Image (cartoon, one colour):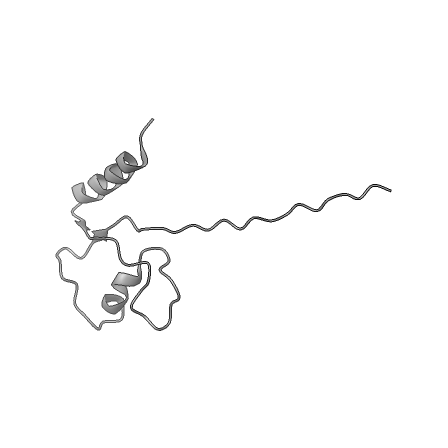
Length: 83
């Protein structure tokens, strides 16, 4: 079985073989007043999408593995009351 690091590296190696530039993961606290947190790893590309900056690599394809923070909400199951 592959470890999570091996899976992540396999993903990056695949896209690098397809001429994608491997870019570092963006911060979980984005520099954007419109977002509370990073989602889908795309926030670092927003200025490029909006035409505010030019893509700094050619061809203009990128891949990354985004950091993640998961908080599981625990819910209580309803308890049946017995008479």
